[in-house]
Length: 511
Image (cartoon, rainbow, N blue to C red; front, side, top):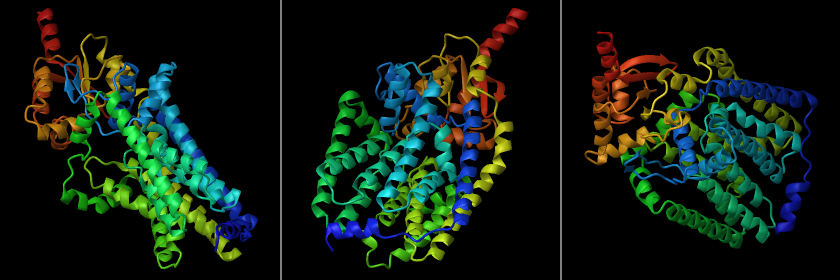
């Protein structure tokens, strides 16, 4: 079968019709998840509830770049660096800051734009694969059913942007014949996706295998070559712009401290994370993998781009969860790949009855995913105070001394240069370099920080002590803190500690 015939069969075949009832059911489910997403996003934006310390790291890197620092060193006189984040997201955020956008507003705008771009990319890819416009549109919005996708709206990180560029890269190459312009555009988009998130290579991997299986070997190798050249250009730009610091940083931080035992636990850790952090993803992923298991026995399996995309996404996501410190945000790509495979499966149903059942199943999956979202809406309103970080800064009060915070966004919003960029990486690096944390501990002993703000639990309890010994800052941090700082106040998840010398000065003044 030549290319023109294949294209004609792909585009001109009349899809099985769907009656109004299943369409209305699916559109209603989609509308519900859109409303839930909008309400959740507004609550979390108002409360800054999604600004975790990982998001704080990304925001801090944007403010660093605005000040001319691209990847701060692992340690210098201004404090600690070290991160394995790739630069596109925080570079775009730094651009918004240069244009005058407020820090958090710019982060939220960029995150929202990334998810909108992702939905449009899914729609475009599904249209290229022959899915009708109404089904492609509903399916594109269906990705919001997963908590990891909703979280991307309020938790500024690169996952949504990388996924969007990855999907647009597939859309650019999904319909033959392929012009040089299409190949270049796809390679550019895959390169940009990689520059946003190091592990986003599964789109290129799926496209390469699919092109080879379809007989487009020249296109496949040209796409791979151009994309790899793009990777090298991005890497070279990072090295030159950071004055070589990025090489030392990624050499120290990229693995996250993983060993073979931890890597082999990746599938189990991914399952546990999905169960606890993103139950809305599970029905989509389970059904997607079930469809994939059936397709594996098809003679044209390797010519099924959505199936290859899900396989590559699952394989790399499992590898990601084989690294310590991996959180639920990495599940976003699994939801995207699952929805794409399910939408194409429904669109290609052999009979109207099968297609109508498929549409109803999609609606049911959205409804199942919406239940835990609805249950948490009231809790989100009660749990968090509006603009919690600004209230913490008010508790600390005006100061010329630096604020040490587990979430570096606190000193950033106070107009400071955070002394510790990433407390998780600091703990990791401290396990490999004796004395690495000593400058921080010495500052604590000297009460050189105007306040210490923790978000990982009560350090005077066993769980909190374990967290700070093994996940943030490292051994010795809590004894130095409690000896020299007193607990002042708790707001939501954040505990504020103030220097004890202030208390002594006040006592002597009273006497």
